[in-house]
Length: 145
Image (cartoon, rainbow, N blue to C red):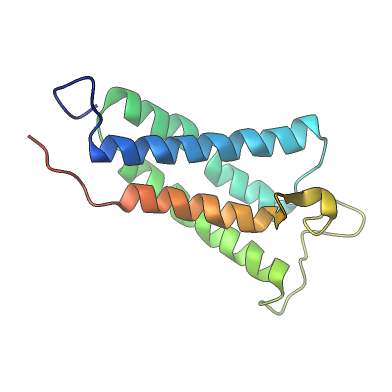
């Protein structure tokens, strides 16, 4: 916490907490889909997980320690994950000319009904999660004493 009063959170702490909770929800959701439901992710989903999973300890430790280093460590992961998720979403939507190559008929696929959560496909949810985390990390910094 960056304020001297332990009962209140600064604007930076609230944004970092939101980023942490989004990363935690995305990680737990991905683990639930893969480990509990047994649905294997496609190659692009794996790469997005590689960018998302480390965000939980990075953001959590930065929030716990109050050192403000989350931006420096998390931004490269968030930006790479957002780029992968945008590419994956473009393939999924058909905006990009290539078919969804990593998602084959015999292997894991992001196009099935089982890969929809709240009516949205997983690639779109990934874009939303990475964009929300990026927004939280780039919010203007509050005044420091």
